[in-house]
Length: 85
Image (tube, rainbow, N blue to C red; front, side, top):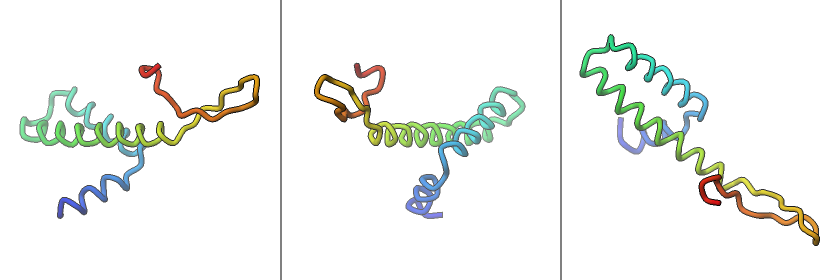
């Protein structure tokens, strides 16, 4: 599979599906019953899924706007993550 096709396939996976797969990988790795080569492959897949989930969350945060009520009415304000305030 070409790198471009792999990226498109990863982007098509939903956040929920990526999280479920990530949880499955973590469970397998925590069990300790995985051969070293398989554990390395699972770890690499898990890192890619983690980055994908983080990217999807950042995209959603950029789309969210907070409505702030002031004396002059409601105003839109870009969403700021808790660690940015």
